Image (cartoon, rainbow, N blue to C red; front, side, top):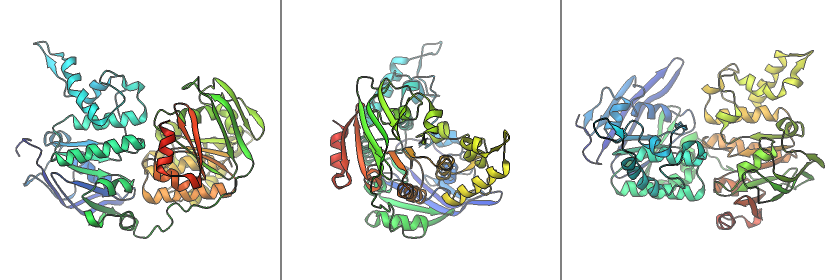
Length: 501
């Protein structure tokens, strides 16, 4: 097969089947994509999208089916071969080399060297990387250390790395899951520019509004099979949801009216380590869902970490049920009835190698112990009750959490805290990287908890989600609350105006 000469590409997958012990991941799946088009690939977690992408990237081989690229049948597609053919990936799971800078990460394995000794040509490398960062509108530069980048910046770094090759087919797997509204809009504009430049783009996302904006076609997978295809004029959210899950989701957000109760947490003149010169005042009330909106870097996650006692506060006060909360102790926060569902569930919310039941029971060991020993029967009962309540999909509670889909991992994080009957739940990007069905379940759970009198503080960069689930929205800008909007005042424009100050 000839090497890449231009951006034109024609790729076809037909009859692709992949079988694992006890499970059929893909069953005669077909997909085609051509230069200059954006194809949205949708489906719930477990539908087969990741397996299909691994086959396309050469990471695994199909058991049956054909791969045809530029008219030639490919029998042994490897990652190296895929790269030479101009197929570039942006994976949902971020794996940057945090000990290197931005330039070294973007050009890893493709460094520019000079002289007979082959020393790195840093100037040329930075000159190659800088226009890509400008195209993406990043806040970081070629020399910045990756260890100092936020999760959203790391996502943009992955995209920059993919664009740094002679890309003919760009595969984006949940590329906006960590991005703010403005960064998402910038990326969608980049996708349009790449399409107009003749690049083929395969766009995988659970944010269906983005598919509506940029996709020329939509291909849906369900249970490892093709579930349907839509042309540009057929694309709408309801149709996509029906293809993905095989039923209507008539009340996706299922918003209920909550009468706010007593103050649960009162924050007065709080100063965080991220913004020591700004103060935050906020009251969270029982039975109310308060969303915390704002741009990346506004200080939302830092505020959550301060409330939960991870980061020491620089000043101000917090009262939980009228009692002072020190703000520098996670055990004290948990004892007061506060729990945190972190943004990065894999790094901060779960023990991936531990079993499902072990993760669920971990914070409740004291309550599950008898005479100093954990009651394993009580652990099993708790885990089984949590599995049923949250509809955690797993073949057994002894499965490692790492084997679960993103949506089911998030349910395990929620389950371990719900077992402690919290008074305040802080959720940082609770639906990041989970499918539409799991999202609907999380939204339903939020409404159920609020109805039971739990206070919820939800940090979200998904504007549709913010407007859909909240009773009111507190908007942060550069470390302070720039305004609070009631449900009647919620619009994308009103939130953005406060977010940019």
